[in-house]
Amino acid sequence: MSAASRGTVVRFDAASGQDPKGKHRTPPASRYQGWRDRTCACGEPRITVVQRLKTFFRTVFLIDLVKGLLLTLKYTPQPAFTFQYPAERRPVAARFRGLLRLQVEPETGAQTCIVCDQCAKVCPDDLISLGGHREPGQKIKILDYFDFNLSRCSFCGLCSEVCPTKPVKALIMSEDYELGTYSRDSQILRVDEMYDGVPIEQYTR
Ligand code: SF4
Ligand code: SF4
Image (tube, rainbow, N blue to C red):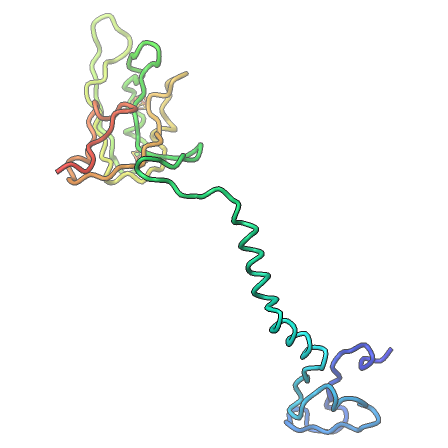
């Protein structure tokens, strides 16, 4: 089967002796029968009658428009992805890293932090400062202060990762993401603001 009968565009090549870069090439009729039917004078492929008819019907029957509308209809029954914030809050992902929080024992409310200072040492920006004291006869230190500079935190999670307490991790990356305050001082969280569930000062003048 010849290339022409397979429907491919037959192009004139340099072997015929003609200028291959010339705009108006005229190949020998015997070798390239039908060449003129498939290419225009500049050598580009002609648009065939079938292609013209296809384009005509696509335009008349608005095929592309109908395809676009069908795609829109396909996604229309989906539930709305809109939350009435702040009345509704979007649930966060399981591994979301929000505001750093201290946790207490859920049953007793006792302090879980053992004042080991690992979180402060690992922080690449030196944003945590903490200290405690040991009561006579007690093994575990009492946490006196825990200052955290929220304004420069990159939420890398290293401090929470190294926290060694089990089964309750003393320091977690919580789901809190509403962290805006009006003053820079409010971005320094003290120990009583660090506990999980305590809202930080927000939008108050
Ligand atoms: S999340 Fe990273 S940057 Fe923020 S306090 Fe912890 S270690 Fe420092
Ligand atoms: S790493 Fe955990 S236990 Fe150690 S000081 Fe920080 S919060 Fe407390």
